[in-house]
Length: 335
Image (cartoon, rainbow, N blue to C red):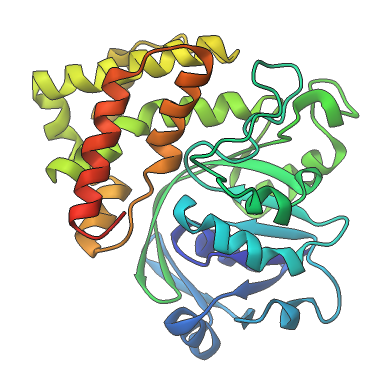
């Protein structure tokens, strides 16, 4: 399989190395220090105390990576605030049969692609205000991916895998493309097999929107609260007032989920118990703040506020969280 990675950061780099090790022809669209490092030393991964390097084709020009053929799989693994630019860059890399795997956090632009749910066909201004993302990446090419793994970038082109290998993948239009029972299309089944063979804990889902919303429900509070306060997740949950504020946001998101056909059975306290097992964890957004990188706020929080308004669910707590996190980002020049 010909694989191209757009966004060779923590998750994209990790996936690229694993797929290359499994024998797939991997290329990377990168620039600057990352491109130079990959060309000089290969794409590198630290995993279980061992460092592996794989030679991959790398360029900052999409045309260089499609000289022979379009990729079979294009992995888009960028932060949501960089998605517009990534989508424009991806356009020349997408052939008629290219699968575009979106390995990203938060609400994606294709979230309302299912025709059997409320708000079918809705475009979110918080995610794709100009429509350029949807115009650049054909919806028929997309397979969604929810990542349950922790990786970091130690240096340009050098990725460290910390924990987790679970990738949940699914067709955005659910059963519409199904050729087998359960809404699992032929291409989804084939991709699931390829990912499993490469060492990922791959799961083919018949309802990827549900998986997206459930992960969002867990990290839409911890991420921005940690960015505002500088606290690790254990400290956030140890403070009863902060914990209750997070629970109030989660109850609003849970009510929205019921209105869009994605109910959540878990309670906020049950989800907090899962988070506690991770210990004193620095969220990805807190790490971005400390490193002076822009924060991924719109897909995690602003989209929830927007969806709430569309289905008539008040979001005073979520709106307050968005406002405080947005102001924190603006003051620091990160939003």
